[in-house]
Length: 254
Image (cartoon, rainbow, N blue to C red; front, side, top):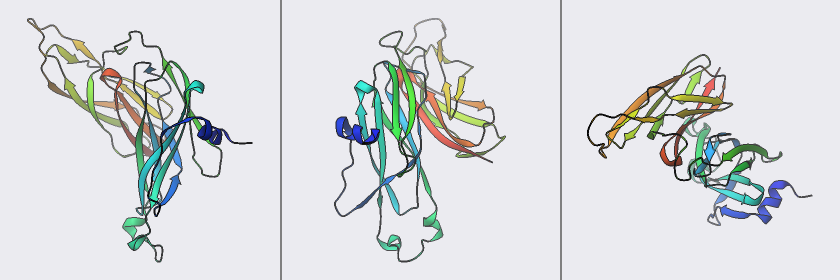
Protein backbone atom coordinates (compact mmCIF):
# COMPACT_ATOMS: atom_id res chain seq x y z
CA UNK A 1 0.00 0.00 0.00
CA UNK A 2 1.39 3.35 -0.96
CA UNK A 3 2.08 5.89 1.75
CA UNK A 4 0.15 9.15 1.85
CA UNK A 5 3.27 10.98 0.73
CA UNK A 6 3.69 8.70 -2.33
CA UNK A 7 0.03 9.01 -3.25
CA UNK A 8 0.18 12.81 -3.07
CA UNK A 9 3.27 12.84 -5.24
CA UNK A 10 1.44 10.92 -7.97
CA UNK A 11 -1.97 12.57 -7.78
CA UNK A 12 -1.39 16.14 -6.68
CA UNK A 13 0.03 19.06 -8.62
CA UNK A 14 3.72 19.84 -8.14
CA UNK A 15 4.05 23.54 -7.31
CA UNK A 16 7.83 23.70 -7.11
CA UNK A 17 10.15 20.85 -8.03
CA UNK A 18 13.93 20.75 -7.92
CA UNK A 19 15.89 20.61 -11.16
CA UNK A 20 19.56 19.70 -10.81
CA UNK A 21 22.50 18.98 -13.07
CA UNK A 22 22.88 15.29 -13.83
CA UNK A 23 26.42 15.14 -12.39
CA UNK A 24 25.43 16.71 -9.03
CA UNK A 25 24.75 14.49 -6.05
CA UNK A 26 21.36 15.60 -4.77
CA UNK A 27 20.18 14.44 -1.35
CA UNK A 28 17.02 15.02 0.60
CA UNK A 29 17.53 16.75 3.94
CA UNK A 30 15.19 15.77 6.79
CA UNK A 31 13.45 18.68 8.47
CA UNK A 32 13.51 19.24 12.21
CA UNK A 33 10.26 21.18 11.99
CA UNK A 34 7.88 23.05 9.74
CA UNK A 35 6.88 26.27 11.49
CA UNK A 36 3.43 27.68 10.79
CA UNK A 37 1.08 29.46 13.23
CA UNK A 38 -1.91 27.23 13.96
CA UNK A 39 -4.31 30.18 13.79
CA UNK A 40 -4.36 33.82 12.72
CA UNK A 41 -4.54 33.47 8.93
CA UNK A 42 -7.45 34.95 6.98
CA UNK A 43 -8.40 34.02 3.44
CA UNK A 44 -6.99 37.33 2.21
CA UNK A 45 -3.53 36.59 3.69
CA UNK A 46 -0.58 35.12 1.83
CA UNK A 47 0.23 32.04 3.93
CA UNK A 48 3.89 31.27 4.56
CA UNK A 49 5.46 28.24 6.21
CA UNK A 50 9.08 27.90 7.35
CA UNK A 51 11.25 24.83 6.85
CA UNK A 52 13.69 24.43 9.72
CA UNK A 53 16.57 21.99 9.64
CA UNK A 54 20.33 21.42 9.62
CA UNK A 55 22.81 20.59 6.88
CA UNK A 56 25.32 17.93 8.04
CA UNK A 57 28.34 20.15 7.34
CA UNK A 58 29.66 22.88 5.03
CA UNK A 59 30.11 20.45 2.14
CA UNK A 60 26.33 20.63 1.61
CA UNK A 61 24.63 23.49 -0.25
CA UNK A 62 20.96 24.12 0.30
CA UNK A 63 18.94 23.65 -2.88
CA UNK A 64 15.30 23.89 -3.92
CA UNK A 65 12.37 22.34 -2.15
CA UNK A 66 9.59 20.25 -3.64
CA UNK A 67 6.05 21.23 -2.73
CA UNK A 68 3.11 19.00 -3.62
CA UNK A 69 -0.35 20.49 -3.14
CA UNK A 70 -3.66 18.72 -2.87
CA UNK A 71 -6.05 21.64 -2.43
CA UNK A 72 -9.30 19.62 -2.52
CA UNK A 73 -8.04 17.74 0.56
CA UNK A 74 -6.41 20.90 1.99
CA UNK A 75 -3.07 19.17 2.22
CA UNK A 76 0.54 19.97 1.28
CA UNK A 77 3.63 17.76 1.27
CA UNK A 78 7.09 19.34 1.39
CA UNK A 79 10.65 18.07 0.86
CA UNK A 80 13.94 19.98 1.13
CA UNK A 81 16.99 19.08 -0.96
CA UNK A 82 20.70 19.88 -0.89
CA UNK A 83 23.72 19.28 -3.11
CA UNK A 84 26.55 17.23 -1.64
CA UNK A 85 29.84 18.71 -2.85
CA UNK A 86 32.61 16.14 -3.42
CA UNK A 87 35.35 18.44 -4.69
CA UNK A 88 38.48 19.59 -2.84
CA UNK A 89 38.40 19.12 0.92
CA UNK A 90 34.89 17.64 0.56
CA UNK A 91 36.06 14.67 -1.54
CA UNK A 92 35.82 12.31 1.45
CA UNK A 93 39.43 11.17 1.41
CA UNK A 94 40.30 12.85 4.71
CA UNK A 95 38.48 14.33 7.74
CA UNK A 96 37.03 17.78 7.27
CA UNK A 97 38.76 20.77 8.90
CA UNK A 98 37.10 22.04 12.06
CA UNK A 99 35.53 24.99 10.28
CA UNK A 100 33.79 22.71 7.77
CA UNK A 101 32.64 19.82 9.95
CA UNK A 102 30.04 21.68 12.06
CA UNK A 103 26.33 21.36 11.20
CA UNK A 104 24.78 24.35 9.41
CA UNK A 105 21.25 25.34 10.53
CA UNK A 106 18.77 26.81 8.06
CA UNK A 107 15.28 28.27 8.10
CA UNK A 108 13.64 28.63 4.68
CA UNK A 109 10.35 30.44 3.93
CA UNK A 110 7.87 28.81 1.54
CA UNK A 111 4.87 30.74 0.27
CA UNK A 112 1.60 28.82 -0.07
CA UNK A 113 -0.31 31.93 -1.16
CA UNK A 114 -3.94 32.76 -0.49
CA UNK A 115 -6.04 29.82 0.64
CA UNK A 116 -9.76 29.28 1.12
CA UNK A 117 -10.95 29.04 4.69
CA UNK A 118 -10.55 25.63 6.31
CA UNK A 119 -8.16 23.37 8.23
CA UNK A 120 -4.96 22.51 6.35
CA UNK A 121 -2.12 20.06 6.92
CA UNK A 122 1.56 20.05 5.88
CA UNK A 123 3.41 16.72 5.73
CA UNK A 124 7.20 16.65 6.06
CA UNK A 125 9.95 14.19 6.89
CA UNK A 126 11.86 14.42 10.15
CA UNK A 127 13.53 11.14 9.22
CA UNK A 128 14.14 9.71 5.76
CA UNK A 129 13.24 6.23 6.96
CA UNK A 130 10.31 6.90 9.27
CA UNK A 131 6.72 8.06 8.65
CA UNK A 132 5.92 11.66 7.70
CA UNK A 133 5.12 14.24 10.37
CA UNK A 134 2.12 16.56 10.10
CA UNK A 135 1.68 20.21 11.00
CA UNK A 136 -1.81 21.77 10.91
CA UNK A 137 -3.05 25.35 10.54
CA UNK A 138 -6.39 27.04 10.04
CA UNK A 139 -7.48 29.76 7.61
CA UNK A 140 -10.53 31.81 8.60
CA UNK A 141 -12.82 33.99 6.52
CA UNK A 142 -11.65 37.61 6.58
CA UNK A 143 -14.22 39.95 8.19
CA UNK A 144 -13.54 42.44 5.38
CA UNK A 145 -12.50 41.17 1.97
CA UNK A 146 -9.75 43.73 1.31
CA UNK A 147 -8.37 44.55 4.77
CA UNK A 148 -6.69 42.98 7.78
CA UNK A 149 -8.84 42.23 10.82
CA UNK A 150 -6.40 44.45 12.77
CA UNK A 151 -4.68 47.66 11.67
CA UNK A 152 -1.18 46.21 11.63
CA UNK A 153 1.96 48.32 11.46
CA UNK A 154 4.16 48.03 8.37
CA UNK A 155 6.91 46.00 10.07
CA UNK A 156 9.94 45.35 7.87
CA UNK A 157 12.51 43.70 10.17
CA UNK A 158 12.69 41.54 13.28
CA UNK A 159 15.87 40.71 15.21
CA UNK A 160 16.31 38.15 18.00
CA UNK A 161 19.34 36.44 19.54
CA UNK A 162 20.19 33.18 17.79
CA UNK A 163 20.59 31.31 21.08
CA UNK A 164 19.17 31.91 24.57
CA UNK A 165 19.61 30.03 27.83
CA UNK A 166 16.69 28.65 29.81
CA UNK A 167 15.52 31.37 32.20
CA UNK A 168 16.72 34.19 29.97
CA UNK A 169 13.91 36.48 28.75
CA UNK A 170 13.44 36.91 25.02
CA UNK A 171 14.10 40.40 23.63
CA UNK A 172 12.59 41.04 20.21
CA UNK A 173 13.54 44.12 18.18
CA UNK A 174 11.10 45.18 15.46
CA UNK A 175 11.35 48.06 13.01
CA UNK A 176 9.44 49.39 10.04
CA UNK A 177 7.72 52.48 8.71
CA UNK A 178 4.56 54.50 9.35
CA UNK A 179 3.19 55.68 5.99
CA UNK A 180 0.88 58.46 7.20
CA UNK A 181 1.54 61.52 9.35
CA UNK A 182 -1.49 60.65 11.53
CA UNK A 183 -0.38 57.06 12.28
CA UNK A 184 1.23 56.25 15.61
CA UNK A 185 2.49 52.88 16.80
CA UNK A 186 0.40 51.49 19.66
CA UNK A 187 2.36 51.37 22.92
CA UNK A 188 1.29 47.80 23.67
CA UNK A 189 2.24 44.99 21.31
CA UNK A 190 0.07 41.90 21.75
CA UNK A 191 2.04 38.66 22.11
CA UNK A 192 0.74 35.10 21.75
CA UNK A 193 2.85 32.01 22.42
CA UNK A 194 1.48 28.77 21.01
CA UNK A 195 3.83 25.81 21.35
CA UNK A 196 6.93 26.80 19.30
CA UNK A 197 5.56 29.99 17.69
CA UNK A 198 5.88 33.45 19.26
CA UNK A 199 3.40 35.74 17.50
CA UNK A 200 3.74 39.54 17.73
CA UNK A 201 0.92 41.81 16.59
CA UNK A 202 2.16 45.43 16.40
CA UNK A 203 -0.70 47.78 15.46
CA UNK A 204 -1.09 51.46 14.68
CA UNK A 205 -3.69 54.02 15.71
CA UNK A 206 -4.97 57.17 14.01
CA UNK A 207 -3.73 60.20 15.93
CA UNK A 208 -5.61 63.37 14.98
CA UNK A 209 -3.13 66.26 15.10
CA UNK A 210 -5.14 68.96 13.41
CA UNK A 211 -4.98 69.62 9.70
CA UNK A 212 -4.74 67.07 6.94
CA UNK A 213 -3.15 63.64 7.27
CA UNK A 214 -0.24 63.45 4.84
CA UNK A 215 1.39 60.48 3.13
CA UNK A 216 4.69 60.82 4.94
CA UNK A 217 7.09 57.94 5.56
CA UNK A 218 8.49 57.79 9.11
CA UNK A 219 10.58 55.02 10.63
CA UNK A 220 9.71 53.25 13.87
CA UNK A 221 11.57 50.84 16.13
CA UNK A 222 10.42 49.04 19.24
CA UNK A 223 11.71 46.44 21.71
CA UNK A 224 9.36 43.77 23.04
CA UNK A 225 10.34 41.69 26.07
CA UNK A 226 8.83 38.20 26.31
CA UNK A 227 8.98 35.83 29.27
CA UNK A 228 11.61 33.10 29.45
CA UNK A 229 10.74 30.02 27.38
CA UNK A 230 11.44 26.29 27.77
CA UNK A 231 14.31 24.70 25.86
CA UNK A 232 13.22 24.27 22.25
CA UNK A 233 13.56 25.67 18.75
CA UNK A 234 11.18 28.61 18.09
CA UNK A 235 9.94 30.94 15.37
CA UNK A 236 9.10 34.60 15.99
CA UNK A 237 6.24 35.53 13.65
CA UNK A 238 5.50 39.27 13.41
CA UNK A 239 2.27 40.23 11.64
CA UNK A 240 2.56 43.12 9.22
CA UNK A 241 0.27 45.16 6.98
CA UNK A 242 -1.69 43.58 4.09
CA UNK A 243 -1.40 39.98 5.27
CA UNK A 244 2.39 40.00 5.33
CA UNK A 245 4.77 38.93 8.09
CA UNK A 246 8.44 39.04 9.07
CA UNK A 247 10.01 36.09 10.86
CA UNK A 248 13.11 34.90 12.70
CA UNK A 249 14.08 31.61 14.34
CA UNK A 250 16.04 31.02 17.55
CA UNK A 251 16.92 28.27 20.00
CA UNK A 252 16.58 28.07 23.78
CA UNK A 253 19.14 25.72 25.31
CA UNK A 254 19.69 24.36 28.82
